Length: 324
Image 1 (cartoon, rainbow, N blue to C red):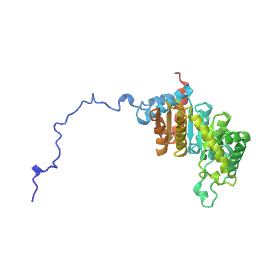
Image 2 (image 1 turned 90 degrees about the vertical axis):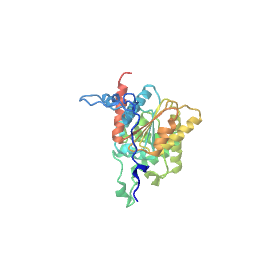
Image 3 (image 1 turned 180 degrees about the horizontal axis):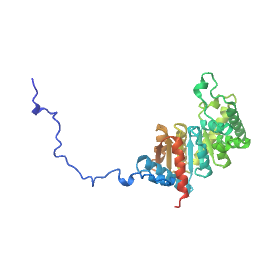
Image 4 (image 1 turned 30 degrees about the horizontal axis):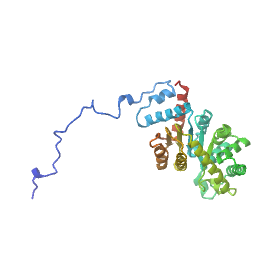
């Protein structure tokens, strides 16, 4: 039996009678004033930054650079928290230069950072081939790396007045490490810039070494957490940059934020920046969103560290060289 098409409720809907609005009156999220500007040969780096579109990542990059510039000019705290990957992609010269220029006032690292930074300082190289060495049990057994770090920890623990970052940095300076000028720890120690190291026991190759003293390492790393909290307590109007740490530093930062707010410190006007080559849950919520909710601004910049960090530091340096 055939169906009666005239009574079929699933006939195509007629759009006659649809009410329209004027494009000229309708609010829009993108306008030609926001578009990028073509490059012209011989332009400055700042001209390049200004030429970026005021849309999405382009706008966020400008805001990140401007936040850093304002904080430097205003004498506000600027803390860099980082994982080890930026070291492994060759960014130590850019970061050490940023320390020299006082773009940052403090440095926080995870445990892997001190390993790669020490190896750079001692041998001018780092990052072994895990797959090639794991099978026969030699992965993570570099003698000089572990001996220097554990020796520095033992001295620091005996002194009772320093944290893990300071202990290792000062040891690199004392021994005259061949590549100390490229070491973030040694540079920070030379400049008397506070540097903290936040260790998760069992995650780093030096924890396998027979000289490992868990009590000493834990004591120095805990002292560093207290020092880090002191730095965070001064972040009102300042900037916290999380560079390539997906878990450890975002968690440490969140706890420090809670501590300092509990103790009555203001974080009003705080800007947080997260830079990584992919979006991560903890860095997004623990750095960008939760600490700044209702009080500041969080910015996330996604891209390769080896491109994005040099570009941001160059933009900040250029911006600081300009008047006003």
